[in-house]
Image (cartoon, rainbow over all chains, first blue to last red; front, side, top):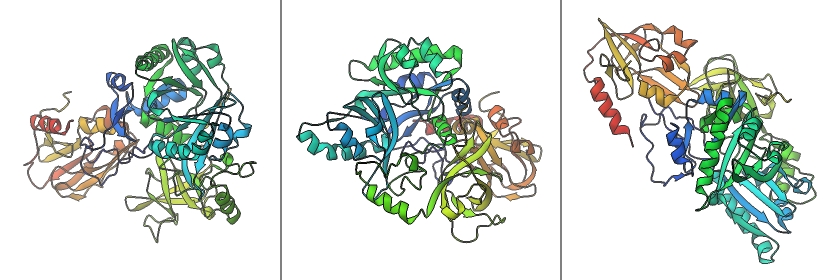
Length: 414
Length: 128
């Protein structure tokens, strides 16, 4: 046996293990000081297996990844995602300011609604994917990836300076004092009701948000998530005097959810759930070498929105030139699992690779709900058609795969 | 079942070996299984394959992990557990029983392998 090691701490982090990397099963040693969420002790008490992840110590699983994955698809699951970063941006210039840095059209975002969007650099490649929450006309909160927190807070903070100087904007990175719980699954609403959530919270529409109370704890509740399932994300203030609130809310949700089949869930299930739903993971599908158009995020890239935004010019050029490569979903046909970083080839029927790879797998794993092995990867646009056969290079041999429609999993809507 | 049965020998790569006459049955330890989580795919060699000590004899994959398998001894593969192809979860459920992987005809002794006590002590050195 060899090397169970969290190979990539970046991004939300792929949890993939590099087969050639020693040491075997050894604890990951690092000089980096890992941070703990307010729920660290609760995770330990629940038997969570703690791993380093994007600079944090977080549970990769509790009872087991498959059990947790199934709980979210059929009942509910509770995740501690307090490692995610948050910015608070308020003031009369807030809308225009954020609109100038993201691909979405914030002028169309109503109060009390959130939108998934992307922040690009001037070259049109991706700095981070974000959810922008509009709490009021001039009040916004933006959620960013833990691994990008310093970069994005720095980026937004620097661009905010002139507005702040003119008194038109306030900007704060509130990541340190903000905990985040994600309650996901078809029974998430019912769990919230059992946990005495305000009616305004359980009545939220998809991507709606509202301030309220759950289990006696003050939260910002949003009907958002990262599992391709119905669900909620609950932001809780975690300052010096309110740390206990986070634990109280976590325990109350677990207790309310237990009779309904709700399980505490780790990062492992979070990753398989998002992959089945074809939700991008920063560091895998998207990064500063990819643009949103080739990543399949054209639907959040509003090139025709009225305001100029960072990267717009470059993205228009990319669109006009045509995309040389595209992110596609594939399903393994042969026996094997195509994983992050594995080379992709055109399939010729032979298991020996001939010539250089034509693309690369960005994420790949068994899909527990579908009971097939799936993945995402970049291929030349000519090979991006549904039904195109690909060869995934797995430990030197090509294994057949086929390009399929995504998302791999889509929940039944009532 | 003990976590590390006393009738088995162990490697630092977390395989176990059980002597059965002049044959040796091989699998992975419960420590390895815990670290891997839910096992979804196992690749084993063909019967007749000749393995060196520490020779790679396949891979085991869980949802999140890929790990190579290393032979505890030199020898020839005389049997593989074909059931694992369809039911890799047998390793999660019963790694010292139905989750065995290969049987080797040993071409040398089991010198250098650890007993259960030594293996547990070794695991202690891996902890935080």
